[in-house]
Structures are given as structure tokens and as C-alpha cells.
Length: 560
Image 1 (cartoon, helix red, strand yellow):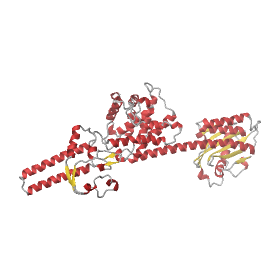
Image 2 (cartoon, one colour):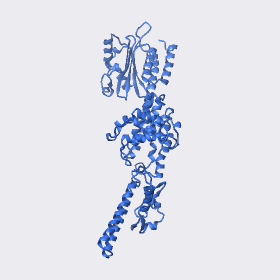
Image 3 (cartoon, helix red, strand yellow):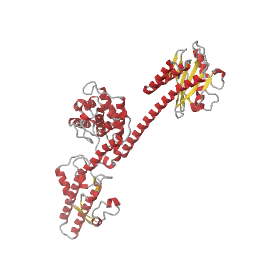
Image 4 (spheres, rainbow, N blue to C red):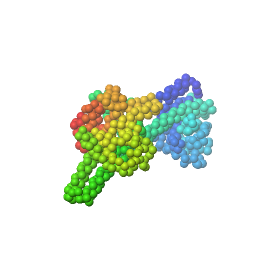
């Protein structure tokens, strides 16, 4: 047996190259076993995979003289997978099972002369193939931490004349040394897969935690990846137009996947009441109830004034009652107007704002202290403690100094005068800040080089191609295609969502009309938008994730 000839050395060097560069691990395992069989001149070999310390599966069975080479499931017919825990207490184990439980090396000159083991597998193999198994070398393949990942068996070493020999100690050591490469290979594979699964699990846990902050946006981080993947696939498949040459590497796909899950991770710092702000007066609760109570007070005051005038016979009952009814109708009208302004669906005009200012100047008498029962933090925001403690006239709609908390302005009139929507200037800045926080959080993660684009993809989903987006005001020319895909995915999910308290669910036709306007106004990329429409990405998503009531008849040509 030539243990150190040029051919064997060359084969071992080739194995090292394969381990470093080959992605198909099963092919490398087979090549290592072939090389080890050549080194020990074995006529046949078997390799068993050990999975999770529980299952023993025959993966390769090779016999040179019989011209047999079976892989994977081809071996299941005569060597089914063994559940190892069930074999632990057997009196007579197979050689492969014994190698696993004892972690020992078995080197037999005559397999059938040893009655310790269950050799039914070899007996059946020999009978079926008119073969004679004599010598066997069997040993476990372990990781550097001692975990068994496989069992290698080599059968019948032969000399040049074909005479069956035995496995000498030197041959045994050389063979085991070569097969140890399998342990390194499979350990690296398991570690890579485990760390990949850990990363993805961490990402999904973080995304679900962000979604769980809000009962209304609870699926956003989970659905944006779906839309991003659908649109990216359609863009890669485009066979005409500006995107016909667009391709994505496996690293690009994985980076887009990670980025789409993490694009909103900065929202962990955004207060829920801002994210979910359904009305202009909402903080932890909708403060329209406070204002309604003030109108109730004014109505009761009007009623008391009416009754007092009746008692004093100031005027006729009919006139006094008409005066009271008139005051009540004015109060009801003013409250209806304030309540309508609290909803963010309609844009306020200057006339509307002037009307709010007029209503705000109406006063009511407060008798109870405004500083009792509040926290020290609230009390520190009150500039005139004495005035707040004593009874006094107060405006119906108020902007008080204690409405200013850090950067937030909770003034009632200030919020009611938001021109459109429910979010005021400071809250908008806080929401926008989540992108900066997202970028900072992702930059702090030591992504490997192949995932270096995650920050770019995730941090650009609020950029616009006309350069008016945030946080960096990037133009379309400065953004990669996957980054622009993220922007469209984020917008489409938000528009189709049917669980947002600040808007009623929109029909699919309404959503596409809004997106068409966004395309025309320089918000989203027109080339990707065209692919989004022509490939009907919107419908692939809608059929799975939005309510059937939202899906109406769509003619794609109407939205190009």
C-alpha cells in the first residue's frame, strides 16, 4: 500500500481545496471517503450520517468490485434509518451502532468470526451481491467538540493481486486522519447553518416584538418581506424595459430578506400612541372626552341660568326656554365641529382654523384643583401652581405650558389645528426618527461582508426618487434597485392594511390610484412601479393577505 505517493498527496491537497471552496457538502464527503478508500485500498465502504444524536442513516455505499455506488435514499431499501435511542439497550448491536455508543474504533480481520455484533446487514449484503465481507475498519467521525456526526466503514483492503488483507495500525491511523476532514466539514456546515438560523430567528423575534408593540400594525414587519420578495422576483424576470438586465446574487437576495424584516427595527423607540394615533387629540387615550365634558359643563350652566331666570321671572317661560334651546344648539354645533376636526381624514381650511380659534376662546368655570392627584413630573410642567390649584375661568380648547413634554406638544388647540392627518410636526419628526435609529442599530451589527447592503436596503424605505424623502434625501440615481423595492413594499403594505385605527380599509383600486399618483409625483420608482402593475404583484399579495372585500375589479392598464 503506497501511503505517501504523489497521487495520494495530490488527492489530499485537492480535498483541502474542496473543503474551502465547495458549497455542496455531500459531494465533498463522498470525495473524502473515496480518497480514504484509495489510501487504505479498501474494496468497499459505507458512510452513515448521524443527525441530532438520534438518527443513523446510510448515506453512501460503494463497492469497486461490484460496481455499486448508491447515494442517499437509494440506500433506504436495504438500510432504513435507525432511531438510535431504541438501540441503546440491545444486547447485540450492529458495528455502526456500537461505534456510536462506545465512540470506539472497530478493526476486525474476520467479521463473521466475531459473534459480539449483529452482522445481519453484511450477511444480507453478501448474499444479495455474491460478495464476501472479511475485514472491516469502522470508526466514528466527530467534531472538534466530540459530537459524532458520522460513522465510516471500510471493507476488504486488497493488494494489487486482489488478495484481501487486513487494516494495519498505520493504515488505520492514516484512514482516520483523512476522514477527520469530514468532521471538520460537517461541523463547519452545522455551525454556519446554526448561526444563520440564530440570526434569522433573532431578526424575526425583533420584528415580531416591534409588531407586538401595536395591536394595529402587528403584521407590517412580517408582510413587507413578502411584497419585497414578490416585486424583486418580478424585476429579475423582466425581459424588456430598463430592468431587463437586472439580476440579484444569492447574497443580494439574502440581504434583501434580512433588510425587509429589519426595516422598522428603529420603531422600538417610537411611542405606541404616536404610531397608533387615530385622532388628533389622542395620546394614551382620546382627549376629545375631556372637551366633551367641558361642553357638558357649559350646557349644564346654560340650564342652571335658565332655571334661575325662571325663578326670578326675568322673562316669559317661552322666551327663556327659546334662549336656552338656542344656546344648547350652538354648543352642539360647536362640539360637532370640534369632533369632526379631531378626525384626520379631511384637510382643514383657514376658515376651519379660525372657527377653532373662536371656539377655543369660550370659557367655563373650573372649581377643582388641576394639581391634585398628578405626578411630580406633570407638576413640574405647570408654571403657575397657585392659579392651577384655585378655581378659575379656563378656555374651552387649551394650549397650556404643561402640555409641552420634552419635544412633544400636546396642546389641544395645537393638535386640533393639524391641517391633515392626525400627526403633528413633533410627532412626525419622532416617527421619521425611527429610520435614523434603524440605520444606527443596523450599523452597530457586525454583518459579514456578503450582508453589507442590509443597512442600505433597510434605511432607504422612506426615501423618494425626487430627493425629497428622509433621512438622507437620496435621489433615484443614488438608490439601488433593492432599496427602491423596499420603498414600494413598505408603501403598499401600509395602504392595503385593514387594521389601522387612523384610516378605513381601502379598496385595491384606491390603493393603486394613490401609488400611481406617487409614481407621477416622483415618490416611487416608475420602472419598478410598472413591473409591480404589469406582473400583477399587487394581486399575488392581495389574494393572500388582504380582505376579500377590499379586492375589486382592476384593469392594470388604468394604473400605468
